[in-house]
Length: 212
Image (cartoon, rainbow, N blue to C red; front, side, top):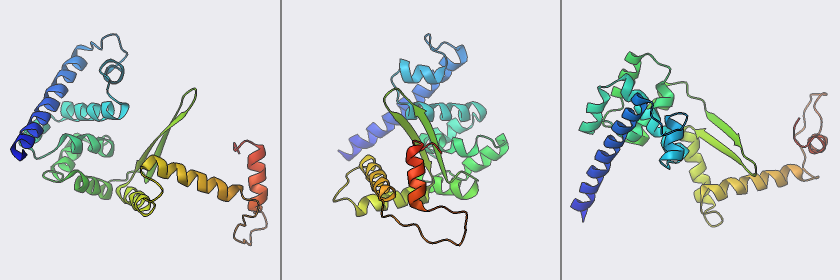
């Protein structure tokens, strides 16, 4: 069974390499099957999720700029996951610095690579992207490794109540809303004469539909 699993993993890596090669051909020919760009083609034409399409596109950009990375991937020194996740950290660096940074990630696990990237770059602590739809809002949140580990610890501590990250986030939102909507909520005292009370602040925010 283990040998069969190992063989399947090898096949998976080979398929990923083949897919990226074909996507590169599509990009070179600018034939997106009627879609505006490669990303849109991957999402709407091939059925990838936006997250997966973004990772594929990140790999392609780095492979186009640094062709020698293909050999590193083939040899197993770098994984496609590490390469894709590295892009947002190094995309604005000169090619030589990109190459040096990626070399430092060779033979590292995805987690180790992420820690190295976060410690060596000025990546934002938390980055939130908002996309509004007709009936819902999509938030995409980039966390650094430490914050993600904290979130996982909170989830583990509440495992008797929440089973997923989605449930945890919903629970935290509900708890915060109840706390700040509570008329008896008291803000810590301040010597600043211009600071209004939390109760008055909540009242004004509510009247302004939380758009202040």
